[in-house]
Length: 228
Image 1 (tube, rainbow, N blue to C red):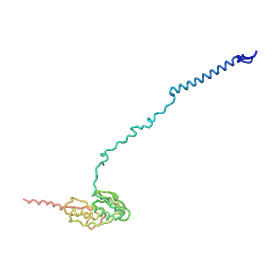
Image 2 (image 1 turned 135 degrees about the vertical axis):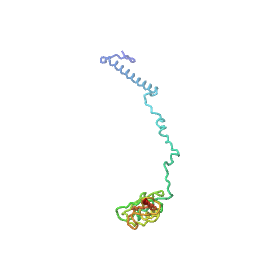
Image 3 (image 1 turned 120 degrees about the horizontal axis):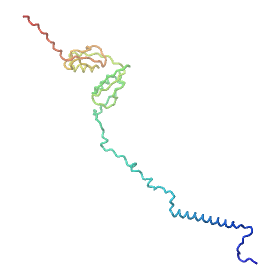
């Protein structure tokens, strides 16, 4: 008998019936897995990728806060006005530069500007002014007292004779001489006494006590009564 066409293959003696079944099952399982993967991929695409994280909108990250960009309120013109009491000074009136000059010359410059002075003598040597308070160049009002620190001690000065002068004139003479008046009674009338006496020696800033005014009237003593 000759073979014609493709006759059915009969299992031979060495073939195992379970081998074909195993290959069939493996092929079917692999096809099922591929179909499952393709189906899952298609479902993920059709579903719009729900599991992929989405980036926040750019506007939400770039829009600044209103509070952070709002400028601070500008002060009103009234807020810029100075507060407190304004001190009026004469135009251009300042403490003169007297450091290093003789203290008497410094005092004359202060008097010319109608400023007061106070001398503080030291324990060194010389008559030069070492420093002032307020400092030179400081704007001041008329009548302000300027303190002068002098290097050396207070020099000696003669006491003027003031008896019989008016009390006001005597005070001016004492200040001009570097001394200061004190008053025993009133400040009116002529000088009737002074201490220390005129012609004696004193030092700068020493006081001189003045007794001013008319001598008090002597109280008359009572006359004895006539005997009866």
